[in-house]
Each structure stands twice: as C-alpha cells, then as structure tokens.
Length: 311
Ligand SMILES: Nc1ncnc2c1ncn2[C@@H]1O[C@H](COP(=O)(O)OP(=O)(O)O)[C@@H](O)[C@H]1O
Ligand SMILES: N[C@@H](CCOP(=O)(O)O)C(=O)O
View 1 (cartoon, rainbow, N blue to C red):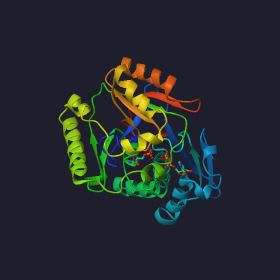
View 2 (cartoon, helix red, strand yellow; view 1 turned 120 degrees about the horizontal axis):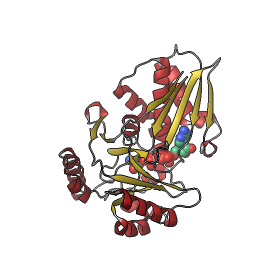
View 3 (cartoon, rainbow, N blue to C red; view 1 turned 135 degrees about the vertical axis):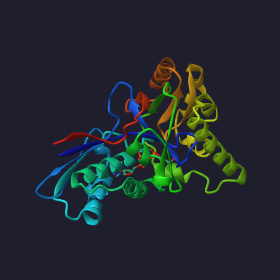
C-alpha cells in the first residue's frame, strides 16, 4: 500500500498570476491537504472518503482522481496490477487552496510510486497540469508545482523543468482563512479581463521579476513592499463577501500583505511575527469565516508531496 499526502497551496501569491504558488504547512502540525491511498485489489476500484467527499459528484467518472487512474492505466502503465484507489478529500472544493490540484498531484504521485513507473519531474508536472486544467478553466502550474515540490515556486512552460524554487524570509507567517463558501475557479477566471494594456503588461512583468530577484538576493522586506495583485484581485474581490473589509482592517493588526489565495475565496496574509499572525487569525475567525470556514497560521511546506505510509 502506498499513501501519499499533497499539501494545500496559495496560487498566484499576489504578484505572480498563474506563475507563482506556495505550499502551506499549518504550524500546529495538522495536515492541510488531500491523501491518495493505492493498494493492490482484485479489480480496479475507487473510493472517495474524507470531510469533503460528499461535496464531489457521486459518479466516480466525474472525480478527477478517478480520471487520473483511468488515464494512468490506459496511457502510462497498462501492465500495472489492479488497484484500489482511495482519495481522502480533506480540502474544500472551490476554496482557493488548490483543492483540485491536490487530488490530482496526490493521485499521480501515488500511482507513479505504486507502479514504479519513475516518471520524470517534467512528465509528472505536465500530466498533473493537464488534469487540473479540465476543471479550472485554464492550464496553469501555480498550484500543481508547489503542491508537488513544496515551498514557493516560480512556474510555467518557459521555465526549465517547469519550476524554480524561490527563497522566502524564514520569519514569515502566512494566515490562510477559508470563509466557508465556495467560489468556482473557472467562474473566477471568467471575470478577468481578456487582455492587458501595454502599461499593465509591463508593470506585471516588472513586479514579478523584481519580486523574484529581491527574494533571490535576500532583500525580503523590499520584496514584501511590492507584493500586490493588480491583475486578478480587483476583479475577484467583489465576488468575495468580506474581502474588502478584511483588506482594510488587517494591516493595523500586523498584516504586511492581504490578498486572495488562488481564485479565492480563501484570503491570505503575510506577517513578520507570530504575534501579528495570531492577531490577524483572531480577526478573521471573528469577522471573515462562517461555521463551515477555517483559519490556519502556516509556514511554507517545504517537503511538498510525500509518502505517509508504505506497506
Ligand atoms: N477530486 C476532486 N477535487 C476537487 N474538485 C474536483 C475533484 N473531482 C472533480 N472535481 C470538480 O472540479 C471542480 C473544482 O472546482 P475548482 O473551483 O476548480 O476547485 P479548486 O479551486 O478548489 O481546485 C468542481 O466542479 C468539482 O466538483
Ligand atoms: N492561478 C489560478 C489559481 C487558481 O487556484 P485555485 O486554488 O482557486 O484553484 C487562478 O488565479 O485562477
């Protein structure tokens, strides 16, 4: 039996629409992500369990994890023995935490291990991105690569091996608050402008390249000072009840940055101290999330996707 965990991620990371993403590790040690379990079975079987399983279509053929298994058997490992695939769906759907990426990454990584297919990093990432693209309304790597590789990843087709890890200040904390309602990624992509002006394109390129260079040269405060999303946040904020109020209130509590995680509605902050992160988390718990929501103070998950059990 192979049991693989894949962590939640913050797509875009404010300055890198579709190109920058970070994997999350709650500081209380809890696992925030999906788990795929693959074991030998008399015939192929799929089970979806976990807190959010009931939010997914009951027909397995509509579940991305099952679709990954069907594809893997047909095109990657036709000789693989029959398996039972269990997806433990621990992340809410349409949350902005890379939920669909999490299922796809955990499943392909588990199947690759179980079948001993040893796909290369690029082969796996491409396969994973193909499947996440089925539901998200656009092919992007900014959930897939941090989820798979961990850390903060600058990612895309132009980048050798699809991804480059960027350093962050080890003192930074990230507060991720899921308000408890869903926002479909494809819908949140459909509200974005189809074209950018020359000015906006130049500014986006300048901001992302400067941010990456500043991180690589350990100028972390300078990086934080330009961490702002002009590409997606202005169009998506009106879809997220409570976001504007949070953005207005959290800086006074110590948030250096307040932005949308992925397509939302999860909001994230970057804080320089644990004290500030706790204050932001407390405000978000009281003002942003409902009974179905949650809030975690996190560091980056530098391990990414990993095996929990091998039997
Ligand atoms: N295993 C899965 N995990 C998440 N979503 C899935 C899965 N299988 C199918 N889906 C469908 O994919 C869509 C995912 O929605 P999306 O807004 O892209 O979620 P997220 O942004 O959280 O990844 C939903 O319609 C959901 O029913
Ligand atoms: N770059 C994508 C990220 C979507 O992340 P998700 O967690 O909402 O699926 C986008 O902004 O659309």
